[in-house]
Length: 64
Image 1 (cartoon, rainbow, N blue to C red):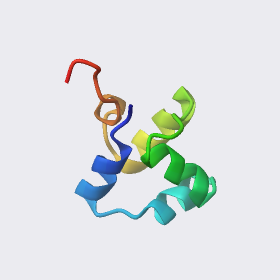
Image 2 (cartoon, rainbow, N blue to C red):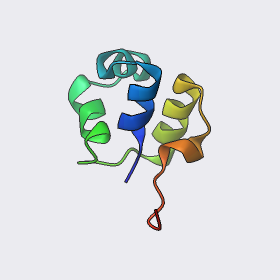
Image 3 (tube, rainbow, N blue to C red):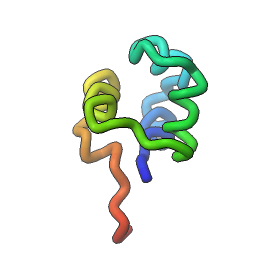
């Protein structure tokens, strides 16, 4: 599970903007946000860089 949806909401950023910055389709980003598909590690780090957060902030622990 990832926390991309929560981080986007906290920062007031739209999925379409993130998709454009990542060079991915809106549908792909939406599948990450809805946790239907998990981004590859490289993509997760790129998302963290774009959103200016620690990559750990995008990952939800199983213990939470």
